[in-house]
Length: 165
Ligand code: FES
Ligand code: FES
Image (cartoon, rainbow, N blue to C red):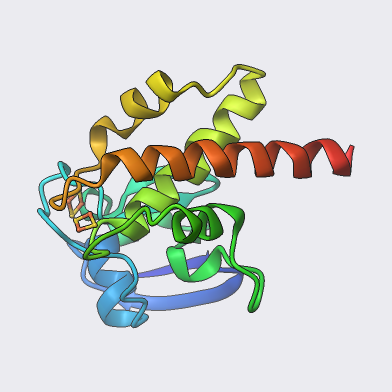
């Protein structure tokens, strides 16, 4: 057992956990943040994607005790109160989900890729989105609308960054 102190969705968290506890277990079972889904537990499906210090990471292959001092954001932490994150709003507008199981991971992947491409000053093309989604599987195969949603959210998020400059 080890104590880990970190920030999850803006709140300080301190817990004693077995050393082999995965971040996905920690979030779902200790913190009851069940929006982070577990589809494979072998780093293939991307349903467990969260952000650690702003970068997308698969929670099923990350040990909770390795996260001392980091900032974790889960799907529960991306909206601004009642206001959906632009990526969530775009998934809603473009029907970027069917059963919804993969959706939290897709949204977290989408936010991560838009933020990275913005930082690089590179265009996030449809081909780049499809390439970037290699690590996220949708069993319902709704990729077309998922890609459209990410493209749309990228426009909104870029506009927000420009407006803030
Ligand atoms: Fe983590 Fe599938 S549950 S990648
Ligand atoms: Fe069902 Fe993607 S919407 S798995």
